[in-house]
Length: 333
Length: 167
Image 1 (cartoon, rainbow over the protein chains, first blue to last red):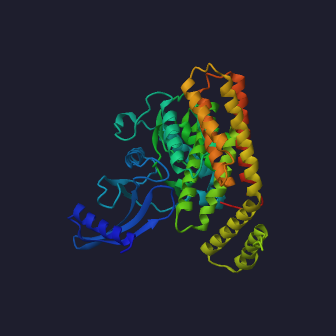
Image 2 (image 1 turned 90 degrees about the horizontal axis):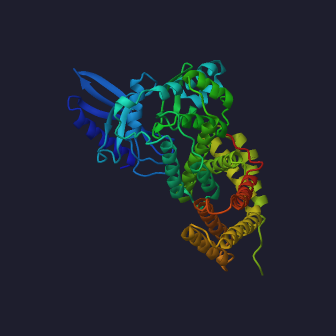
Image 3 (image 1 turned 45 degrees about the vertical axis):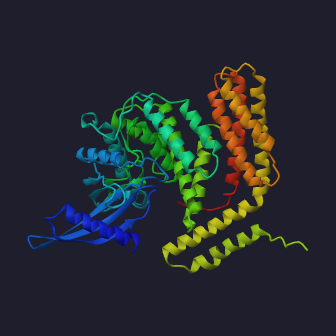
């Protein structure tokens, strides 16, 4: 039996136990979604009888492996972040439940709504009539995420920083660990960058819920509007400038050309009412480059160790070079 | 009689050209087009890499040996370093690396990896000793380390020259 068929069977058995009132429940479709560096995503359709009428529902399973190229490997921060943002009225798929018994499907997972749409990174260049609107929503939603009051929520997994440097210290430590684990050889450039970052942490002026991977590749659009923000696995509580740095880094690295950096910062300042410190932005943009470099190293290492090397994996070699150059240029090498 | 030496770079470039000019124009299926295109990209990267790699590695290895030697010399000069244990550990690692440099049987790539490992140790070690060395000396050493790193980066970037890759 293939892995997919096995998972489908296990899911069906699990759903029948979880929803005994749903008669003749069957999983009629079960597919893995490609993409992502770490999480595994599946669509499934469950069908059953309710008052003798057929009912079906298509939902999404999101699960994290115990280990992978990019930390963390705890699904709860993602769950807590998405639940909070959804309740805040922002476009995030609704999560139906969290399953922490890894015996069910082999890993912890949650089940969420399926949202129809197309990735913003494809829609934006193709539909110039929607660009202004999409850019504004992109920034507005970011500002709103950062403005959410997380304090009354008593998160168990998302831990607030213990000082105004702690978020940055935590992130540096996390990516240092991931680099040493992912690398396929010593990395003097990234080591030098991490040392610089450690010695130049700017104090955070506020603590917000941060997405951690806020890019046009993690958004769905429909009819010119953002309808879903995905991939919250790197969510944390910390300095919200981290999200700005990451968004601008991705815009540059992937050469999307969605906005001019200064324009983006001004728009964020206007939407949030908060001034963005130049030093903080520089720090978080540099750390974002390091984060992506480490993820690329992991992808390259996976490719090298794989028995079946796919040619598209060569793109990681090119992308990593581009990122390394950006790091060296930022540090003035 | 010695083995014939194949001109690897032109052969790889020819393969890339064949894919681009003879195969790609006849394809319709998007996934196949993408895979064929990326295969030609991979061949061009390899073509650039294979001839240059030997020369680049020699230059990089020499550059790293030089900077590591300077770091070691600087540490030895400072007998009264307050963080003696940290400096002794670093000196020992660098000494061991430099004495073992160019060891018979080690390939250029293996030597390159070993020296890079020592460079990483030097970066971390100097950070730990940052208050123990005069700022101008520390700054000079950091500059030399960064120059060595930049050289490696530029070699890596040169392999991508002329390689058209779109995301």
